[in-house]
Image (cartoon, rainbow, N blue to C red; front, top):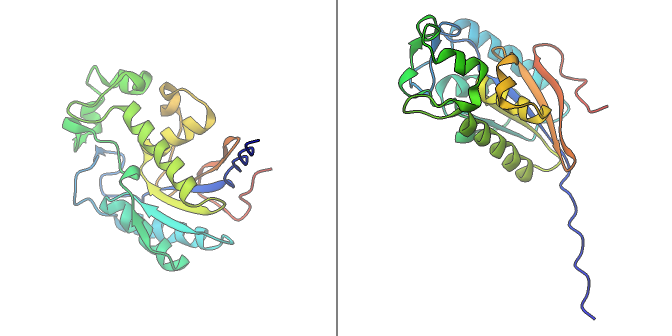
Length: 217
């Protein structure tokens, strides 16, 4: 009689702390996208040091990943230093590819007829010669799954950008992508999602305060 296959044990849950990069000289005025050469402003460097202190107060952090863009790597640097970790670049955390809209002032983009679609029906929009919101959402969610499998039972810091983090939060909440623009992700805020066998649990969103009490109830 053939032996029964052993049941596959579910992976222990992984806590991912999504950190948006710090403020730049163009934050809130320009759609920077993946344009190279955009660094943190003095305020952003201050924010990065502050979020590093907050993450440094946690009992453990097992790994640190960041988007390849300069502003994300510069935000990850003080976290790496305070935790004694290497910041590993992961392209799954990169900003949405805004294509021809990259670098455009937000006040000009807001006048475009397509802007209403971006805000109210993002699942139906693709940036000209760029990425769609659906593709961006799939990318960040695939990255979360990959990090869960790589660090089961661990705590992972992932430094990324506002739109990918908003998409990750919306997915974890079970909210349609068309509602993700209602989520606010401020510079150097932390959004914590616990990924486990029973599905994700959102522990905090856009947190700029104490992180020491992070735990599922």
